[in-house]
Length: 289
Image 1 (tube, rainbow, N blue to C red):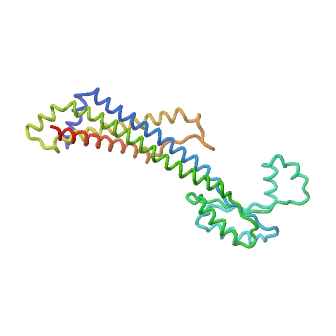
Image 2 (tube, rainbow, N blue to C red; image 1 turned 90 degrees about the vertical axis):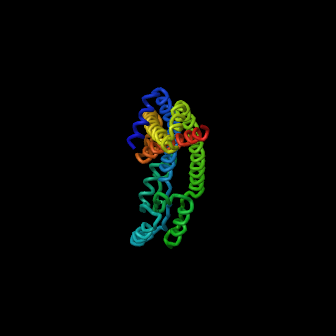
């Protein structure tokens, strides 16, 4: 292992410019992947913020006893899909209407009798805010005799589902395309390193070195370059995020950066790319000498 490390780091000293070019190329290739990941993460976050508005509203019959409402609220809160149940009284509904429906404010002010019903607002848990689960909750709510009507914006939720599926599919396809381009570029770059040391490899073959002995330093060198290139890509991605933060906003917050697990995955991807690129380049060269 010590010999492998010495040979791998010796390659950096022998060709510092080529090593720097390899690391830079890997870094910028992975930076393109990182930028796409940044866009994908923030698109997912934007959809999550929109999903939080998904709720089911059950309108109650006038005169429903408070005890029945309280028992039903506890029962509905126990549904596996339900995160929170909020009771909105008739007076609270009228107060909201006056505040939110400005064009009807005068009409609501002169009412002798409150026409708005009390309701239960049911918020759903993350992972259950799709059309199927929402419809299932709405169907169960209709089984309560004192519930007059149930609304949940079915068409809007179905459109949200389609948008989520399209975003996921497009994101996967573009992400794989960026990754494939990065693999090709990195493989070509490492191939240059192998060709630069072709004479050294030939001498090692002549003195009886095995393929594994020849291959080892190149693989370690490729992994180290991939690691450094991954760190460069993360640094560039964070710099881009810093420049854009505050200028681009989601619905209720600034854009977000990659999670620590995603950053670690990106660096590991760089190591894997460097390792595999070296492996393919060395194997191809060994077959031709």
